[in-house]
Length: 463
Image (cartoon, rainbow, N blue to C red):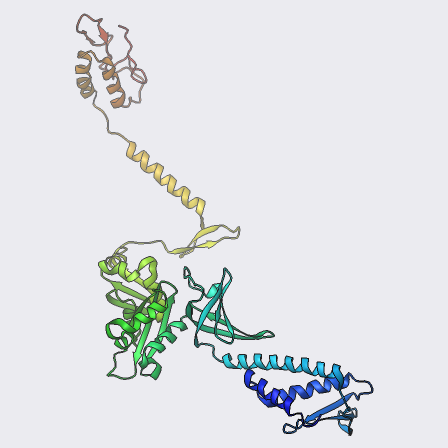
């Protein structure tokens, strides 16, 4: 093939449209011609095709190789005409190489851009993922990277954070996120020039997607207020970020190298009275006024959680009253020293610190019951009852025609009997009688302590 300028112009046109270098297409064409040559009869096993980029002249050089792969012989074996099959094979290979080159260009465009922010148009959304059109490629927004209760309408624009770029046979696959804390950083870089220039830095960020975000900012210039720079005039800058996050609230606090001061600022808008740090456990005990306790904790503990993530400390919030009760509540009391351990039989037992026999949980609870029973029996002991007082109380009831009341009163206040079985000194052959009013029959009422006493206080005489 000589003087094939039309073919050269066609290659140049394809190279411009697809954004592919002409050298890449020529290499693909040379490989295609080698494949077509090997399909022809009596073709050599090894061959090389050379193409002159100016004249588009093709030459096929057959080769012989030794066992080490070294070329021992080379000769020009260019066919007079490749034929229709050779041309079709060359066409298919060229198109395949063009597609591969396009995929490589797309991948190289986004490779290494993890952590960057992109703007796309929502194309498709379902329960598994949402597709964003970025122009030449599509980005994948998985369900796990979506903000809960955030709706994505078809055709609307959306900013997302690139978390991963994968190279696949079908082209690059870009995975983006709407929940990553890095999205907050990138949005503030777009809206705050001081952050993009490096004057103001975002030292830390904590986020609960769809609800609230806290960021800690620091200024490298003493003349620049980091919080004011991020908020903007009348809150214009932070409002743009909030609108992009679909109404998610953003708290901006100044960063401090002092851990106590940083924890105190991270709990804003609550006012903190004192912060006690325990480096061994990584716990920050925060003391606030009683009326600030709920504000410091936040709704369902949200403010405390975000402050802990922002500072890296485990935050324990207590009111002044709670702290005072803990410090003074157990003063002067003695406690048993020991611990609950698992015995050989697998049950939990109490092992005293000074040694001795271990106590099982059943024995522990049984001891409590014994103490309770003893306390009740001791409390149930009544003082001796004076019989004369009982008679004085029962007599008016009998006189009023209510012998049952006298009997009940006697039952409730009956004194314990003496130990000996002898008759009582005050007992007599008879019992005092009370005359009933309105012509009723006389009623015999026995007074406790007489000879006719019976268990339960039942009267002896019949009317």
